[in-house]
Length: 317
DNA sequence: TAGGCCATCTGGTCCT
DNA sequence: AGGACCAGATGGCCTA
Image 1 (cartoon, chains in turn green, brown, blue):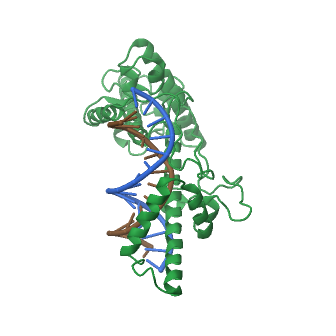
Image 2 (spheres, chains in turn cyan, green, orange; image 1 turned 90 degrees about the horizontal axis):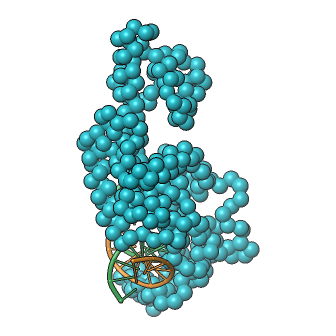
Image 3 (cartoon, protein in one colour; image 1 turned 180 degrees about the horizontal axis):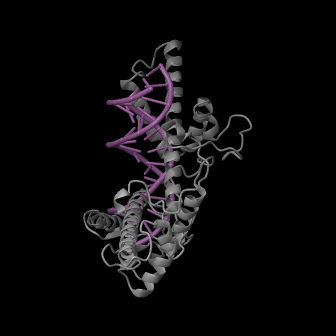
């Protein structure tokens, strides 16, 4: 729950969960970076919160997932933590990976930059303001005056004074040098102020969109989404997402190797025509991903022998 | 109280 | 010229 319309209160505050993170979280995350490099260069991909394997309290365990895929003779996902934690983490990861991301509407048409996206189509995030809209969404660029009033309401206390000083000081170097001019200069400075407010509103909205994207990313990252678990920080979200991608890539590669191995085995035994990826995959335990792939293959009406693999995996056979 | 994280403002730079 | 993007500065909130 992030403030959108109610920014007037607690302008700099953030929403936090109940549990806390250790002060050395970033250092652990950077150690995860080392794991990532190993995953890139070697056959082992490690991802997740290292906190989960270091701490034993429930909050820390729930705060993350740590798993690794074995590229060699690995079966499944061996874990580095204790057996109970391993099971718990594995279950959490599998459950959370299977969750479908709830993608809310975005205020910015990201399609303009080739990323897709759409506007809110139903209820707007802020009710229409009666007179001078206090909501930045309604006022940002279109009504800078309203944004100005919002700005003044938003910053109460020493910060507003400080920012006023900063603004005036910068104005001295810029257009405010001759502040004692006539009405023309006054209107000019006023217009410049409105322009600055517009810029501020745009920047604020841009950062909100960025945070929305981070929230969406958090929603698809398999970590414990629980009210008792503090929200992932931005850097943690990015690092965890990178870990997750690496893990998925390794798992996919492992699956391809397994399919190739089974294909060779079947061909060598003369049990049937080789090359039937889908037929081989039919013997695999039904996973959501496999089911989805099979559904896609069947819906596209391709021959059953068509390999159901990701693009760019022509060397799998 | 220090440190971490965050929101916001701001000026600069680049692009269309 | 206007907008997007970026980084620095600043202050608030929270936790250890």
